Image (cartoon, rainbow, N blue to C red; front, side):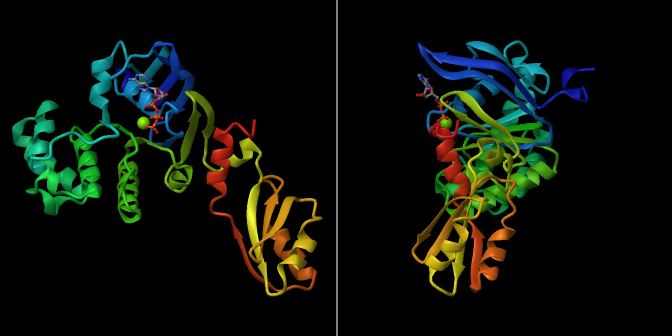
Length: 318
Ligand SMILES: Nc1ncnc2c1ncn2[C@@H]1O[C@H](COP(=O)(O)OP(=O)(O)OP(=O)(O)O)[C@@H](O)[C@H]1O
Ligand SMILES: [Mg+2]
């Protein structure tokens, strides 16, 4: 049985993966598992080592130390086997602006030795999948940025790889185009692909990915489910409370509560940081109502996760 048919082999397994550029350590002993079927978010700020890791997994860059395997194939010793099972989308789009969409995809299909009799149908299928069928005769240079990103996705799908390595596929896109790309990724996951997507925005991936890894300065800081980030970092979480009465009255009620680590009034609203993620926020509403005030709003801080990420990557939580 070949390695990628083995039942329990992970999609990606790195062990103490390290990469130096000269004397600079870009990747520092990264040990990471991505399971088959994961839509895996790989998160870190600029220079954290995301592209370096993805390039190693895509066999474009050799590790300095440690190992990495893709579906059981070692990226150094079995590089050819790895290339067949991955689709790598780099963080920049190549210079193919004068090519037509179909011509471009046909060219990559030929690179993967898909016979010409099958290529036409494959190209039609991948264009359909990324919602670009109507643009098949267009010049690449005439596509919008979002369409170019989707064409990039079509390209990495042409040889039907099991694992997609996507380096910031949503960067530079407007919110609507981002949502479209995310929807395509969900569809691909449903079709059984394993997907690794890098980003420097944790909240962008929170509803998309079932698991994430956060790296900073080449080191793994966290890996697990998105919801676990807060728990592990023990940063608490933030809610906003509004009442019909003056915010200071709500503040007086909430501040002394044992579940609350911080509370302050901001622009007529009360910002409450809870001690940890195990606290049930229902007590906030109960406290307000029992205190005789009228609750008009209670919601979780949407920036909370991004704040957590910033604190984590600044090393404030360890
Ligand atoms: N070819 C290279 N030569 C020297 N240093 C490099 C090279 N490529 C990357 N680095 C350095 O390695 C570190 C990691 O870079 P990498 O591109 O992997 O980060 P990244 O997480 O992808 O960042 P970004 O979010 O900006 O894309 C950075 O400090 C970068 O300057
Ligand atoms: Mg990068």
